[in-house]
Figure: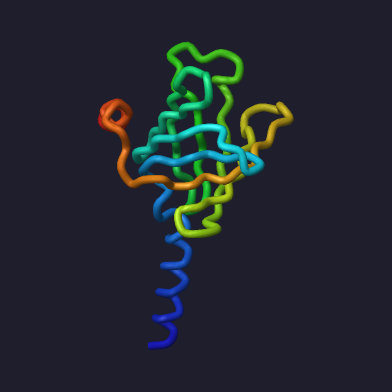
Length: 136
């Protein structure tokens, strides 16, 4: 009985790290400064950064705390060819610490920030695109 309860608690604790991060609207912070907004649905996300064009990325979930992220450009060039490893840890309700590093490039880059979930819903102008991408 106690052994089963122990494993159930471990399973719930491990799987809860991913809870809330797979879908919704998120604010991205670096050094406590807002740098962008992310709209995510399953395996795709739309990234909106200050004064920059929208960027669409495909996600591949590796574990309960890691996913790979790659741009979806038709003819990728330069930075668009890099695949990033994103690891995260839940640090508070709807708040995740993230670390992003390239896995297929030797560029010296590391991003450390905080992702804060603002909403479970996604604005219609981004939702339609994300639904289309996940269903093709």
